[in-house]
Length: 160
Image 1: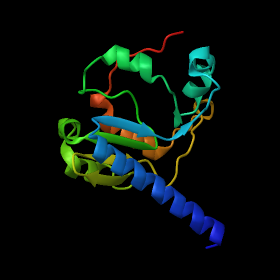
Image 2 (image 1 turned 180 degrees about the horizontal axis):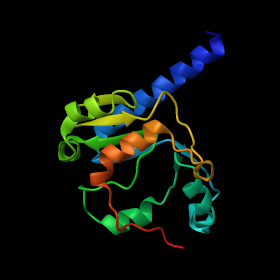
Image 3 (image 1 turned 30 degrees about the vertical axis):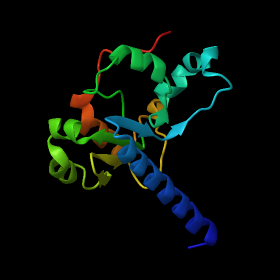
Image 4 (image 1 turned 45 degrees about the vertical axis):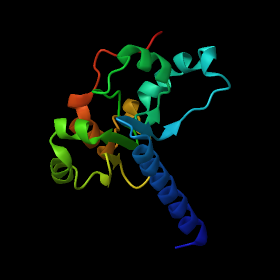
């Protein structure tokens, strides 16, 4: 393996480890990480204008934490979506059958990173983008989404 590839793997593993440790230390009930677009200002309306791209490319992180946070207020019993790394706490995990069920159903598609207080679902070795226009949703993202779907907050809608 070339040195560049070894370095990329090490950086990926460090990112995953950092995310798992942050979820554990912050005692999150839900968190995600993956590809995202960066805008000069999130207050400019740029995310709303880019929404068609977020919808087209599964795996692309749609940043709208403030509005989603307002929609669920103080609830810790629901999630918004699934990305390359998706963390849920033990309470949410038990609602969908627990870690053993996750291991059984997602053995081929996901890498599980249990930690004290929850688990991080990793959708494949590295983050990828699908393309709905081409009928492509990465299998690992779809499998994890299907598994966690009972936890989804279905009433959330983006503001136009």
